[in-house]
Image (tube, rainbow, N blue to C red; front, side):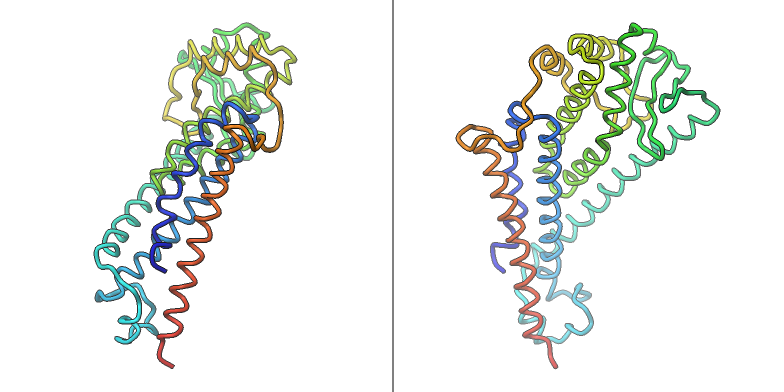
Length: 308
């Protein structure tokens, strides 16, 4: 098993080059999906290897996590062990579990509050207008999802810009962006090296929604104006929704004033984005293989050492 059990804990570093280059060279829809997939796979491998380190590192300790059938002294001696790594892994697993639990709880608590606030409110189709002097707008996922917008936000925009705003928020719902953001946020809780991907994903999902709004309205300048004005007047969403981030607005406006980004599946190999994508893919593959190798190696050791 050896070094393979540690590799998935550091291989998320291979995803960092593609994080920044993806937002510049890939269509935002493809960038968002690519980054989320890479983050989830790398975090899963890190979690598997963290669990293996707990087993390997605590094999010699009383109350170790090995099943009762593997509690024989000879079996314990056969399992490679590192007391420091085992104890550190136990602490890390506790921290990871608490961080993930807090993130999920905060996410669904806000959703529950927002849906309760909808009781008795009137809205057209999937749009709910909240009487509030604080300007904000966000997409509230659920069954069904709703576009939440305050009266102050509507008053800050022209009627033509309302359509762009609603199309932007509906694109968040249609693209299930809250799931991508939550998955990447949890991946960052598992392995802090993945946190930089979250900021890029926020930008990519916002750009994805911007492009959908521009397509629906047929006017990129109108959409850019609506995005800019909404950002200038908006205030933080009450309660702090993890799926209601605005992203770097000046860059979004500049992108909307430019041409439609090319919707290609994979960047050319001989470009910086192509090389970064290959590095990320290689790192993700090696991480998965390392986790599998470590798990299989531990299983074979325990199987061979288990008394009949």
